[in-house]
View 1 (cartoon, rainbow, N blue to C red):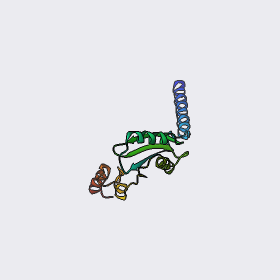
View 2 (spheres, rainbow, N blue to C red; view 1 turned 90 degrees about the horizontal axis):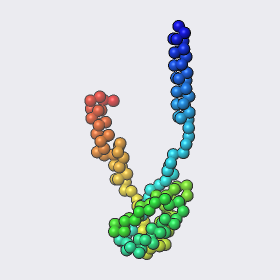
View 3 (cartoon, one colour; view 1 turned 45 degrees about the vertical axis):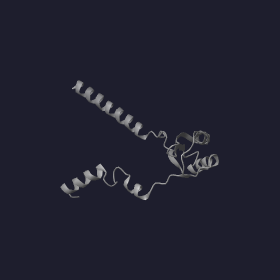
View 4 (cartoon, one colour; view 1 turned 135 degrees about the vertical axis):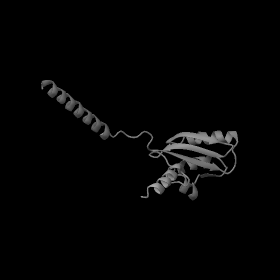
Length: 140
């Protein structure tokens, strides 16, 4: 009986420690890294030459809050990430427009792309197909 009681006490203690550790980890509220980082794109009407592209990249990277910048001069697209707490994409666009004479505008997602871009609910998504098939077998 003594061994059985000790075993139960150890098992109960281990279970209690496990629950305390789980609750401590679940309630921990560390900030999510990069939770406030946004990705944005600026389109140019015409391809950019090397000198103009370099000046634009320099202007964007010198804008407060901008983390990364990639300029595809041939395609006329600039993609950049920035911290929402420090900057807005309109300010970056203004910095670009002051640097170049080429017409630049923020990329706007079309309504059709918005409607079909979700991997869960978008038209033709694998998840939607599986759910449609499952609903034929087991009507909800």
